[in-house]
Image (tube, rainbow, N blue to C red; front, side, top):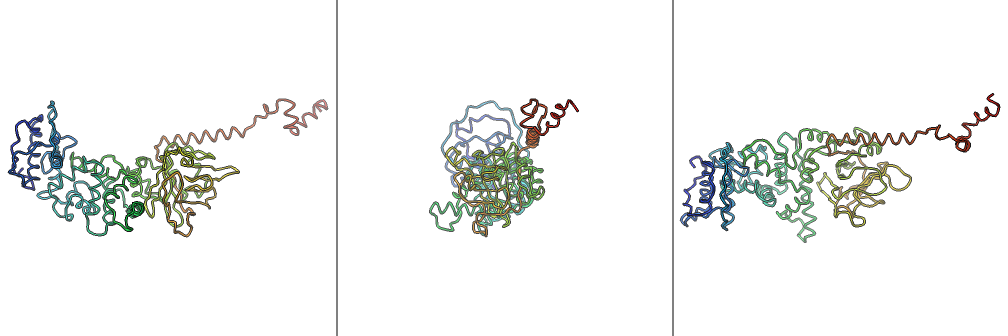
Length: 525
């Protein structure tokens, strides 16, 4: 290829009857793809130039313009991806039965050429991906470059692009881990750069600032706790196994932002961002920006943790707007037919709360679903999902809400039991608590226990967010109107029906009808 930034030697002739010779041809674009596969294989195995014919690739190159095509310096997409897969696997595969295919148009964008020639650097890749210049250090580490201005080798570019676009979840996370640990400086700075890069990949550069501190602190705390359980030495470095476990437990969709962006910008040559995990719309970002407990970075992290946080974000209650009133809080959540997020910022500036999967309605008993969870967002991001399905005694105490009554606790909370819920806001909001253990949710601190108040806290700001759409708001309004109408009907008394016989008038409303009876005895006088 005369435009290739890396010299490519001529491919060895394919053996007769091999897999490549049996592939269906879809015009000049597919012929170019087959030629590039053989060329890339020759380049990545230069030491074996004289060994004879090149073995057939494990997977046939995708058709030009297909969703699996990766274009590298004007070479048809999928060529490098197929070559990378062939280099990793040596077992031959029987060629598929040829089928007729309509000619397809090759993508007009070449990832390598769009990134820049003659060499590709992390800065140029960032430009093609629409990332910030500050993300170039993490991108350079992902692609195996020494620094953001160093040239990325063709082999590394193709291999990393293949892993991020078509690899397994573990493959993608391994590339991310390399992007965090392959940079110079403290490991925490490397992870901070990785998380910021993922935020930009999902939400764009106009989404706002991302405070990565709580997420890095959460990863460090997870490493310490799990390392202790595994018998690791205190202060052990975060390895890939621990990073992979943390992602699976708390942010399972973090890798999807990179995967979707690479597929869109480097594989298919498009420019539009896909709707992926972690991506929030402009309306959602604008709403979250008004919060006094959350920020857009926390909303992105929650969206990577659970898909229900990707839309909605309607503020149902805010103590700053509606007053520090338990009655107003209870009314805001009652009857809302979708997921709700109750968040608290206490007087020590800790932020934590719980996500409820079940509609809130007053009850003297616990209720809810196993998809509810507890979480802390500052100073460290931690997620505590339910332990079981709630079938065992004491393990199904997901939600509790009781606003009135003469016996029992009055308040709203999650977990624990009727005497000591794990997260609890009492009716007077002066005996609130956040414990570390219960039988329903995974153990762990919602707030630092070394604070002056221990497990007790005083709320400074309380917010409730609804994750439903406009129909959920309308359904809640109708439910509240119906409830109020029923209460009004109970207060009304039809006196005519109530006192339509002598017994009711005598014993229930004797004084009311006493004057009329006296008139009747006097003959109407």
